[in-house]
Length: 265
Image (tube, rainbow, N blue to C red):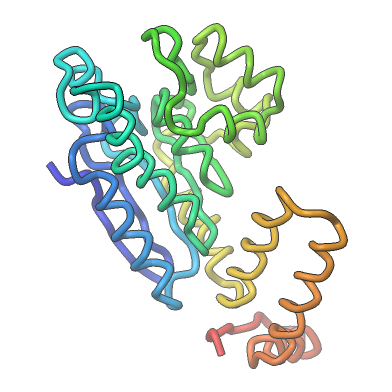
């Protein structure tokens, strides 16, 4: 079954992990290419201003395919170099594609997000959790390590000590703990999760598209650059924004005390 269901409406693209019968496992042949194609199309479409990532059924994603691990098939079969290439050429494509999204990404975590599934959610700029959500990076319990960059992602969100606790114990935390630890920004009733995600995405999508993309890029670059470099990048980006019609629309709307209507010009 194809991994992704893709729906776009009112400047918002929703990507739904669509293997509900098996809790949306990741890593089957072609999964990486599916994410690359979807994310490249989003980046090329200036009409898309925000993306929601969620899971079909009762899980966000249970992570890697345990059955394939047991049977040593797909990404988990062959020699050590072949397995490494399987990660690079498939699973890592999923993660790189999401990380390379130029528009803001909202993860609507509807259920368990485990292992690779948790790391996938952590690539989002914003995370909303259903009360039924659970989070865990349980790789060590399977005798493996986070093979998808999770040790880089998670500490940046919840800090070194809490990330270490999750990695080294394999514990799974509930939505309330995830909120307390800053892994998600809010927890909502399960039945309204997608409504809440759509509301948040709509607020984002109401912003000027060029400025949105520039702001996300500056936040991303700020993780690894100096303050002086960040200021220089901001000056250059700001100069471009001052030349847009959307900037003047924002100024006019504020003066006229009305809601702005940004068009991407």
